[in-house]
Length: 97
Image (cartoon, rainbow, N blue to C red):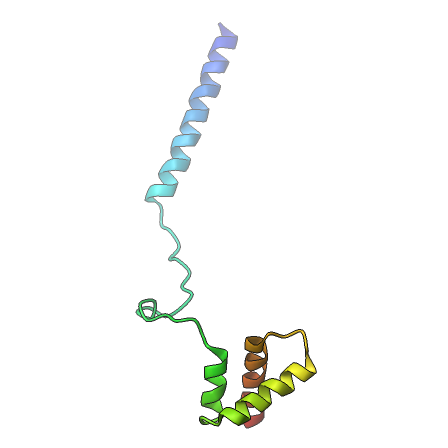
């Protein structure tokens, strides 16, 4: 009888733990989801175009943007064109400060 009682207590304890954990998931306060962008911008989200951003920084001068991209590709030949445009835009922003 003592063994049966201890097994019953273990089972009841396990059930109580499972119920407490499940109740905590549903009813407890949850963290707000991490936002990757500002509210409202998800509808108008477009992937960032590095070359377009660089062109804006160059005030529409396509030749200058192409020269800056070519310079970044000379520095690091393993970069993609988009990566080179990003590096050029970053360098240009830094130099303008």
